[in-house]
Amino acid sequence: QVQLVESGGGLVQAGGSLRLSCAASGRTFSSYAVGWFRQAPGKEREFVATLNWSGGSTYADSVKGRFTISRDNAKNMVYLQMNSLKPEDTAVYYCAARGGLGIVPGTKSYGYDYWGQGTQVTVSS
Image 1 (tube, helix red, strand yellow):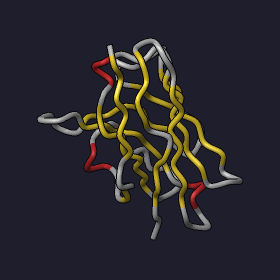
Image 2 (cartoon, helix red, strand yellow):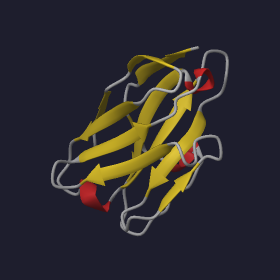
Image 3 (tube, helix red, strand yellow):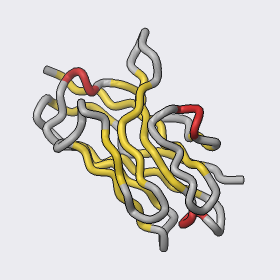
């Protein structure tokens, strides 16, 4: 079992930056693929970024060039650096993980087994 706890959300002006953190439990977390999703009010949860166990990353077109996903396996941490934030980035952001060495869970939420509780990001115009 893996438990995920996000932090770092908040209120920021358009053009600003935030770094979200996700603390994970579990001794074998380094072999897990991780991802970030977000859900705005009245909308479905959508993919933001994913990072697999070997370091390969994928981003949603809407955040490419502005957001960066990274991990520190020694600390069991996952990060999402968000720059040049826009009002349309406002959402609850969720950290997700999928176990199994070599598995690439992709961009769909059903590909992930573990989820955090979410952290609110609000970008004002």
